[in-house]
Length: 95
Image 1 (tube, one colour):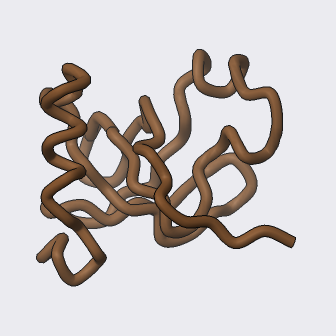
Image 2 (tube, rainbow, N blue to C red):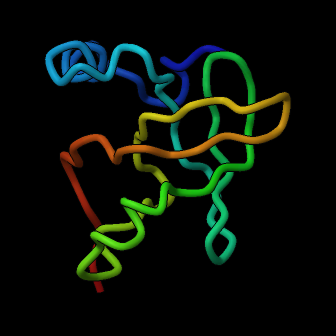
């Protein structure tokens, strides 16, 4: 899959490198189902959940991944992954 078609831009790779996140894959959240997320990466689509640390350090709903967010994740197998970090957001929609 071509990440540029999903809106990938060079600053994301720069952010991953500068923040010692190069060992993780970058992916974009395409769907949210309660506490599970569908994330698209260069290698395919995965069902992902967030790490316990990310879950327990969240102070509001905005601290969780949302559709359209770029995330750093670890692929576990052909279908599953773990989201470790939400990459910086440059725009948001709020109600």
